Image (cartoon, rainbow, N blue to C red; front, side, top):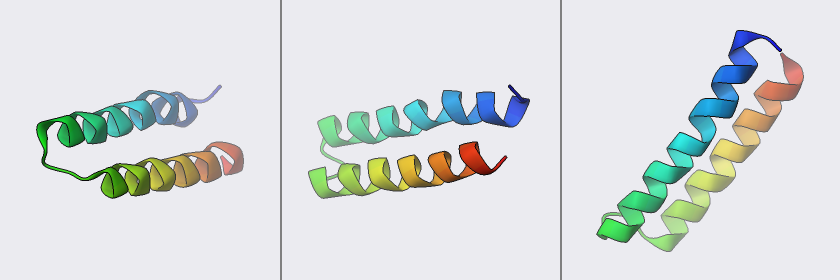
Length: 51
């Protein structure tokens, strides 16, 4: 597994986790968290399988 794929596997959950923490603090709504999760999943999946 190349370093870029490992980076994707590490950073994607961190981005989603940050969005969840922002939602718990009241700085982001549930729709924003869903949008972030969907966007991160699509981009990470695309990059993971095309590298």
